[in-house]
Image (cartoon, rainbow, N blue to C red; front, side):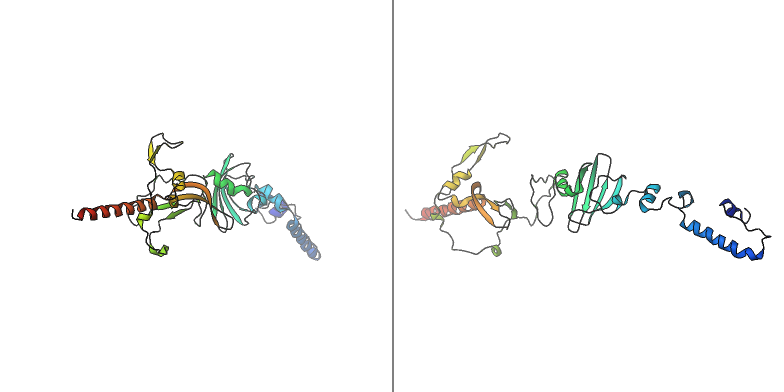
Length: 284
């Protein structure tokens, strides 16, 4: 391509080699006009531009999603790409969402300053309901800092307890706690006289559990334990916790403190055995 061909192809006038010298300033100013015109003109996509004069029009021309889909937004339901990340402008603020859209559901991960939640998102779901949807869609989760489960706890692959283990208790309000046999958890009182504990052997009953496997079971009834003056100390009642964290016992008998009862029964039986042995040692 010869010198000037590109300018000619672009519609610019060429300067003839025979032009008078006193017209050079005119030709130079015309060249500057060409530059100004090209600077203010909209450059097409084929020439490296966007073909638009606004950001929104440029995104559209280039096939880029609107700013609402790649910046802060209140919903995740209009994303056009199968994989995406976005800052969700909901409560709590400054969440980051990562998700995949297959046209019918979105497994979503949301991360904020204190937590991460997962949810299987349907197309009609809004980002604001992410927390409740996460709990339902992945069968709930328990936070490391403490949480309340509303369903069963199943541990089919739990490791066998082989060392350093203790018993676990379910408190009347549903809290799981470990055994507290150590003295550091206790203030000692006077040792009891087991002979004064009375009749601490409940009536043995046979029953089958409602909604169980139907097999006969031997055991005690918590309500009967609670009604006995000698045994009522071993009855376990449901408790409630108010919004301020205060515990309060209810009148609903829920279970029996089996370990404490069995320890007391063993101590009472041991005292009787020792008394019999002493009697047998007495001369006739």
